[in-house]
Every structure is written in structure tokens, then in C-alpha cells.
Image (cartoon, rainbow, N blue to C red):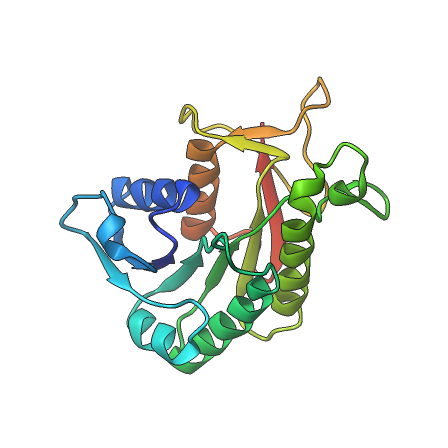
Length: 211
């Protein structure tokens, strides 16, 4: 499968790229700074592109089977840029006929109780709230679109770790373990995303993965 990936030099994006390559897919990573890519694989290439520029993205993703976005805001960007990127990616996918758009989003809008989102709880760090609201607004943009989108929320805590190949799935509710904790390694989060690429279960809806 030919996969276009936005944000392949980021912590999660790089792991998505490596997992895809491990499974025999071809990856074109669209980056602000492609020279930062450290992946050396004949089936991988990094190119420069701006995720907010629909025409440019359309040109770069044409001919691919799907687009995965692991876009993350840079330090000087407002979190509202996430909705701008959503609109640009939707337009690019529609323009090119790329069959599917998978978006790596945030966990803040997952429900911890009926009508209560994780980002509304007292435990949710204040420093993360603006980005969480930006991610939630972007999710609304995808939900209102007519493209074949999937939005992937991580567990409440996601860190570098082991690739175990095991995880549990949910939809709009935070997935927790027997201790009430919600966590996953970035490696296993990438596994969950590539499993969804290869065997779709969540077209036009959100899912989450955690231990």
C-alpha cells in the first residue's frame, strides 16, 4: 500500500512510518523540515510540505492509497490551526480521490462519564487544555465532512516504550485498565493505527487504543 504521512518526523509519526515500513508499505512523509528525518529505507521518502496548503498537499498525496496525518502544532502556532489543517486535508483528499484519511488526534475529548470529557476533569493539566480544545474542534470538522475519515485518539497517557502488539479498542470513551489508568506506548499506538489501515473497522468515526 502507498501511504502518505504528515508529520513523520514527530514522535508518534516516526513510529507510524516505521511500523508501516515493517509491514511492507511505501511511505511518503510530508514535513515542515524533511532534512530532519532519520529513517533510511528504500521504501521511504521525506518531502517538504505545509499541511495548511490544500493545493500543495493534494499534489504531494496524489497516487497514494491513503493519507495519515500525525500533524502537531509548532510552538508558535495557535491551536486553531488544527481546524485549518483539517479543512485543508479534507479538500486535498476530495481533490485527489485518495480513498481514506486517518487523523491522529488528542485524548482530551474522550468521555470519562456521560457528557464529561477528559479535558473537563480537574486532573487534566491546564497547559494541555488549549490544544485539547483545538483537537476537539478539528474532530467536529472531520465529522461534518463527506470524506472517508477516521480519527484516532490515544490513551490518556502515551509515551515511548515497547512494541507488544497488544491493546484494547474503544470509540468515544476513555479506555482504562483494572487500576483505572489509561495508557499506551507510542509503538503500540502505531500498531493499532496500521491494523486499522489494513483491516478497517472505524471508517467515518473515532476510535481509541489503550492497554
